[in-house]
Image (cartoon, rainbow, N blue to C red):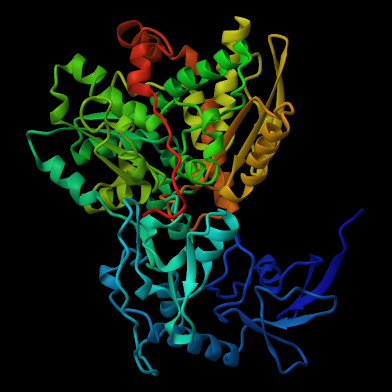
Length: 585
């Protein structure tokens, strides 16, 4: 059945749009930008700010374009002197209760409210200045909540509740006393918060942001007694360039290596190496469970720390299904202070490992349990986001775009295409199945491009025949999509019916790590798709596309780890999980 189309006019220009299209979306089809503040394409429109008002011809009413659907024959006026005046007044009222410390704000020059004020030429404050003063919440290792800067747009609440299904944030109070806070008015650390950072990624101002730890990195780089090593995550390479004017999805891996070398790091590693290693360990777990027919199938991936936190809080009964393999970040951290330290004859206590991640939850992961100290010291000392790295590069005066291409260092810098797609939803699954097929059949998968697990659909299902067995898998991304998959497992366990899947991949953020809470601001599905395309391009151009064929991984097992799931591998590369209450005491 064909979609019903509507004929409308926007500022006198005819336009045809599908039924159900909002006025805001219709205007964008004819390149008319209506200003917004509370609206975000990831979220349902809820008309909080009022900046997007427009006029309907022959009507005295102003309507909010983000939440008003177009109707047949509608004639819309998006800009005239009255509308500009109304929007300007809304901005001025918002500014009257917002701190004016823009120079110290983490969103300075990247703030949606600041941009609107500049666009509308706001130079004076006609309203009484009345900024509420609330204490900052810096209780977590990952995020800082500054409710004094909140403009009550509601994005973070909708993200936390509707997109992520975490329910850690809520509006408290009424009227002028309304404020954003952790649900129950506890600290973020005591709340169900999983540190995914999607609240900060969607906040239009500086009310929620990542805990900046670049100062610690600078201090270490200045210390001649510290051997500074660094690793860069898969998804960083297709987003970092955005901070320097490049298109989303542009692969800047080799320039990132060069920039890190110029910042002063002694060795440059790649988290993709850890991704290949994760496949060897996690894939071996899957193969072992498949061969033994254990009751703890399906195996569920454990690379995403926000997902780990969520599972420990919301589904602790499913912990036996969780892979014990550490994330790629954690594996590279452990090996940097054992394998690398031995090869370079370095004291692990004098090595400082920094990870560059697309994720704010990684700041929590590096201290989440004693298994993150498997080298005898803290395996990863500091984790910073893509945004933090871009600020470091700029403050160091490095002309990023004109840097030469450079390579990572051995032995923890060599990776395959399978390692790089870890940053995409479905990538862990695809990489694992490439290797599982080879191990179980003794031959390589003819077509390693597993299209069924790719794309932006919230839950993807696929089946692959391996050595006479049909392996049923599921891929879920964005925490709000995960519940129905986990509830299916719970129901199967209760009813003692066959499990619907043998392997499940979960990523907390929409699109996977490419849409992580520490990536450049402004992510939409359009941008996420470009980043995903960059991930798969990096895979396609790789000389080696399967983790088990990585020569550096083979050498690591020969020289140090013996084999996947060996005693040494378990000590260094595996972890455990603990049920956690939703509200911490």
